[in-house]
Length: 223
Image 1 (cartoon, helix red, strand yellow):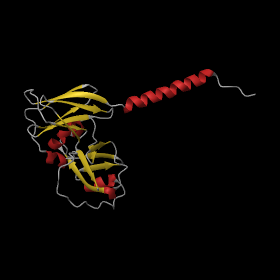
Image 2 (cartoon, rainbow, N blue to C red; image 1 turned 180 degrees about the horizontal axis):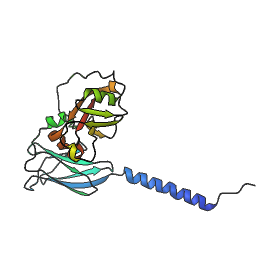
Image 3 (tube, rainbow, N blue to C red; image 1 turned 120 degrees about the vertical axis):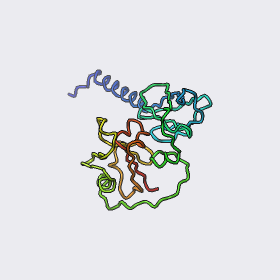
Image 4 (cartoon, rainbow, N blue to C red; image 1 turned 30 degrees about the vertical axis):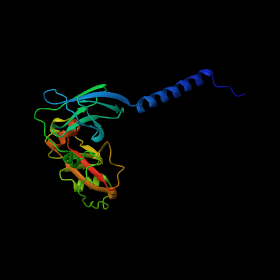
């Protein structure tokens, strides 16, 4: 004679299922936050463009320097770009109010230059360059070891030699950007689909905040 599973067993399963659904919903839910962009004198900067993880959100600040944006749990860095003051980044820490202040001695940079540095500015017309043929490489790590000057590759670990900032950073991995988006791995990329690979170091890499301390590898895919 078969015994029926105790009722407590089903109750536990039910609450485990509900708890999983709640956790998944919480992770996928976006949160609206407000922010302000200020110049070195803490005056509002109007019409500053807001970037999220190096991607242009098309959100601009109003005349009081204010903006609102929806953030997901996996967003890491928010940036403001101004044609007058350049670009400034702030690491996201869960706060619902964000203040981005341009420094007095910050580098002034154009939106075209941002695009060259791997930011997804979307919409700027640029001269087309013929993509290189990387199909001879077995994977992205072999490609980077061969094509990127100063790159040391050990398995899936990458380190950029000669980057002045990485000596003071506990981590050694460079920031990886694919078509304007920060990624944690490039194992999924086929070398034959790559159009170009560039390295950004030192002062230029500082535009990415603390994440760029070990240099930045910018990968652009064939369209």
